[in-house]
Length: 425
Image 1 (tube, rainbow, N blue to C red):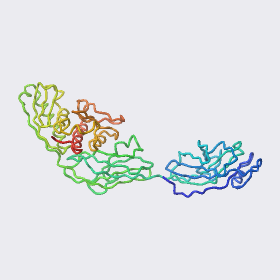
Image 2 (image 1 turned 90 degrees about the vertical axis):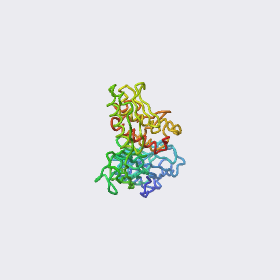
Image 3 (image 1 turned 45 degrees about the horizontal axis):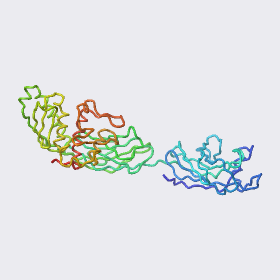
Image 4 (image 1 turned 135 degrees about the vertical axis):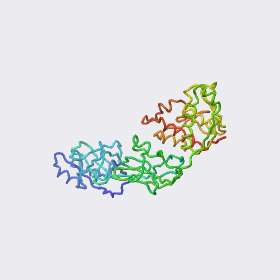
């Protein structure tokens, strides 16, 4: 943030003589035009300028006005929050050497306190020792100020019967960020004091994150209007984005019939398959807006399970695959995963935003990618039972998606894939 504090540029210089008291040093500082006792040459004069500030630091520049005839051995700055005429080796004053060996030199200051006035001078040491040949600029002052972030609420894209994925984005970074996320209410202008709010995915691990963020709202009411607003909480304030309105849906329409039920019953598989399909129907009815009819066949000769885009599903005799995750995996094939005519048109890292953002929100990590081959996708594709039972960790190893949340994520991802343009034929 550019400082709006006017700068008081010093055109005078001071030569600190060996053995002077501090009062004599201060007097010498303001003795413009004082000549070097040994050479009779007017010492160089300096200026200082603060070019940029933020809440805990600043960028400062020094200028040597008349450098000819002098050998400068050190360039730097002295600054203080308590001394308005800072000097080297002074109590309450800090110093910073510049590594730039030119007539214009600069450095970055850190460890400052927002809202606290800082007094600063540039200095050089020339032709000799620090005690004798030190010149200071006149002082100037500045106040490190907090930059306030700005956030916006993005359109709600993956809204279903029981849930929604809601994202926001930083349009301006800021200082002192503590948390950010999304507020939700049935009333306009939801806030963190009175309504439901959820911290965004990267809040706990990346307080300087300034990109897109999002949250998963679950257990919403069917066919109901909601208001959402992004927010950012800093050390001094809570900032809100724009109010968005969305409506939950009536959900997906899924039905099925059980073929060869008698064979499944004879092998003890009937109840397992029936419970698995009914459970999968629950997730796909509540967490997608899609429609499909399934013909579920007990087929002992099938090694695992399979399904085509028409909805014809075969489940083998191995109990491991007679469970809800397998059924949802096969339902993805019925809805276009690896079977749709345009499946191959999507890049191997999914190159459309809705499915990717859905995965990132559910994984609580805005760096993960949705990957696929010619038949499957991951994470979230439930290609193995352990993806649900043991779960899948995000890239940061800060969160593991498992159990019912993984099953919901699977449904939401295929719903988002269809919103991204995956066809059903």
